[in-house]
Image (cartoon, rainbow, N blue to C red; front, side, top):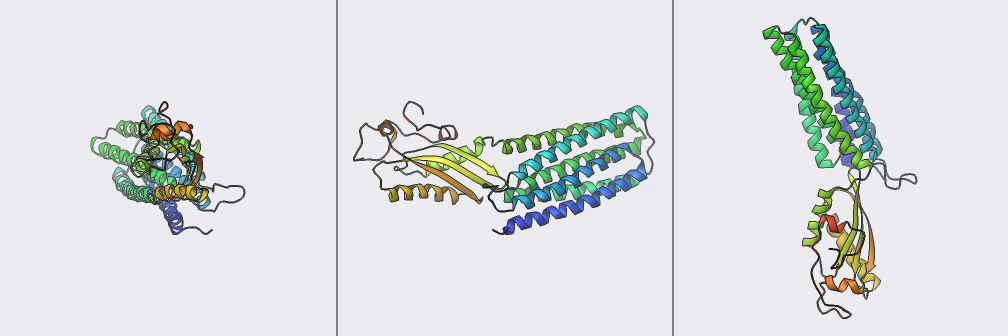
Length: 333
């Protein structure tokens, strides 16, 4: 199976992120050499993380685009969560570096020179980073790519750090108070550590197949509003994410007297309904259950020829109960 156009486009865009990252890193090194500013130096070191993360993201997109094989029956999409977690960790490390450099500057008090040159160069890198980060996040959301989204957030977090450096340089330029440079760097160091932590937390939830209540709730609401009486019950539903792809497991309870072909057609209707409501690639693993006498109380089929008990109430499918492992009854809804 060849890579899709979207996957090829993602890989090409990630190459641009890596190339621009190298250019911006060189620009910050030049600014540091001109100014001898510790905050500019720490910002340049943070850009090294950008470059490393960009190439890691490129490799992740390449692997995620590979088709499933004998050793990877669910594909390679999980690698996006792994590289995203590493990227978030690198962001946290960069934040610690910035805090360290800021504290060191407060203690030693280095002399800064050619501040005006530093302001213009660093400001230009901030604008470039923000624009590229914004495009990356929007593209990642459209393609459901964790790598592009985390790369975009990384670039934008670097933008705010860089703006902090620019602000400190401007204040130092006009006030000649050098320690302002270090204090601003400390503030933004804490900020990017927070951003890094959030990226790591999101990545770990994907690696550990943590349930996404919002996604499950939205799917339950959609099914509830489009259900048929013959779909007596849906339960034990799980959603796993593999990069931009999804894998959905579920049990559907159907009338026991349905012929196998009829039951399978009903199950396929549910699958097609879900697949037609998302732009993501989805793999389904549905299991058909036959109804039991305990299902009569929640079964909405009118004039059921084999009903043993009266209908009591309709079970409203929501995120919580659609995921429960057991069949729904009047007692456990």
